[in-house]
Length: 178
Image (cartoon, rainbow, N blue to C red; front, side, top):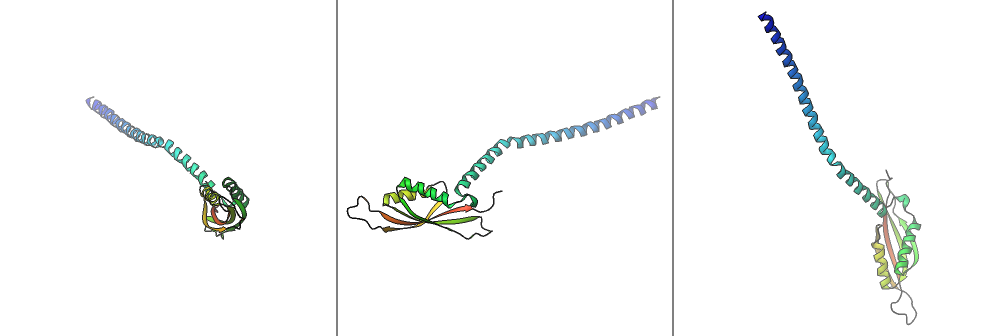
C-alpha cells in the first residue's frame, strides 16, 4: 500500500511538474505578447506625427506644383495673362512676346521655357515690373534685359519712356504625374 501511495504521489508530482511547465510556457508567451503590445503601442504613439508630416508633404507638393507646373499645364496664353497682369500693375506696356522651349529629352525631368518680351515704360515702372515678375509665386527668372532710349518728343517729363527687351525663363515638370 505504501508503494501504491508512493507511486500515486510520484504520479501527482509528475502531473504537477508537467502542468507547471505548461503554465510557465503560457506565462512566457503572455509576457512576450505583452512586450509586443507595448512595442506596438509605442509605435502607434508616433502615428499622429507621421500624419502631420504627410500633411506637410502634401502641402509642399501642392506649392511646388504651382511653382513648377506639369508640362501639360503650361500654356503660352496663361503666361501672357500673367505677364499682362504684372504689366498693368506696374503700368508698363507689352509690345511683343515670343516663346522658346528647350529640346525635350526623356531623361530630363524639367523643361525650360524662355520668353522674349519687349515692354515700354520708364525706370520706376520697369523696376516695379521686374519686382513683380521675380516675386511671383511661380518660378520666374529674368535672365537678361536690355534698355534702349525710345524716340520721344520734346518736353516729356518726368521720365522718358524706354524700350526694354527682357528674357524671362520658367520651368515645367515634364515627368508624368504618378
